[in-house]
Length: 357
Image 1 (cartoon, rainbow, N blue to C red):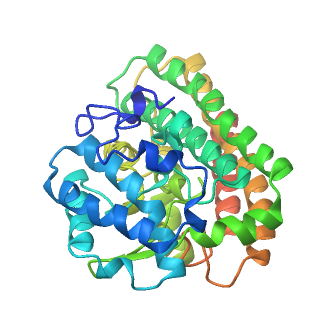
Image 2 (cartoon, helix red, strand yellow):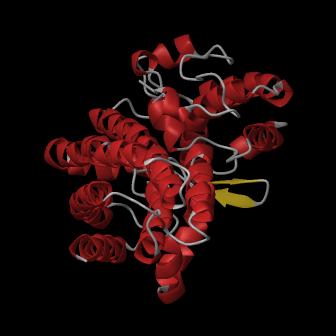
């Protein structure tokens, strides 16, 4: 269920079904990692270190980071300092991060889209965890589809694509985001909040690797930072210090594909957001019907993003109040939920103004 959009020249093969550390059987044990003895977790990690340290293959490195992260989280929470005493493990994690050119631990793509549905890598095995993984998987695929289509529209703005290509891309924005909204609604309706907040989320802990703290895989809100940046980010960052700090912290943690597409969109638009570019120019000779179709597609996307954020904010704030202080969800600081929702609404209003002009 990963889809080709998650693959790039840097990642030519899908790592979902790779098992380079031979852990399929280990993860098939019905006893969740949170209830296993520490020697089971440390023994697995000790055996993995030589393989981790030797690999130079990107898909294999990703699969390894995906597979060692759950036991690392359990050890970090229950036995602080224990995993760091495993010889060579911390440097092996750093090595895998350099091989993948990204984080030296798991992330939303690895925990979600690249987590094999038939051999799921989990910490707790709880329904709450499986529901969140499904949501992150759905969100990752939708996000990369949207970013790809926005890059086509950015090319159209500067005259590199014909009208029909931009119209087709714009028409696919809303449908690509629909699963995100449905997933957020499903979690809000079906998630046992007490279990989610007390028995699952506290196990998703930040890890300090080679002197830097990296958050754990978490909800889809964080992975959208490059989408926000491509649509409206640069100009908002100049006026909103809270958003500027939030975006600057999280954009480097997004997937390489989202990062490359977001950077490409902003660069193509003259180092400004896509909406700002549309406010200053349209392709020469653009057909009025194409102009309105593109704006309609962007408005449909932003409306769905607003709906997603409204549902996610209610769900997240409920669970944040129920969680142990400073525990879990990968968060180091609470995200500016209200500000992100306000900026999304403002971006939609800007597109609406262009449609009416």
